[in-house]
Length: 123
Image (cartoon, rainbow, N blue to C red; front, top):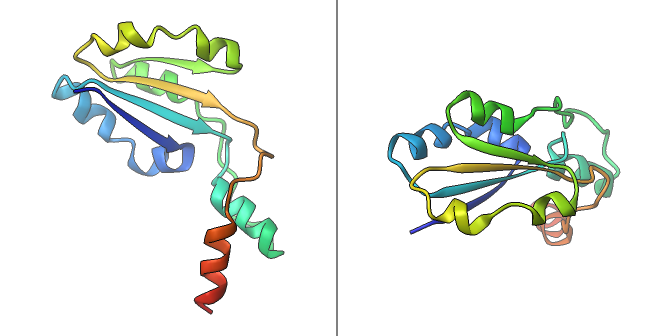
């Protein structure tokens, strides 16, 4: 059964070893990395809270190139049109992982209202 793993770039940097597990076990897993070159939850949370903007920037990691280096097919998506060009049905027929590195707008604010409310209540 195919699986889609939706994750951010920071999470992928911390937990990306699942790629090789999926490869070793011939698992049909599509890894979708939302890449804004930042720890987005930290960045936008700091802005919403009026906190000092520190410790959120990440390098411009090409996760598609990294996956290719591990022997995993991948692509990097820069535009909505490129996303629509991906042949998902063909990918789902494989018994192998595939990674889609999606470059997203780093200034798009995440829906953090609930998280910020919970953090405020925890004080």
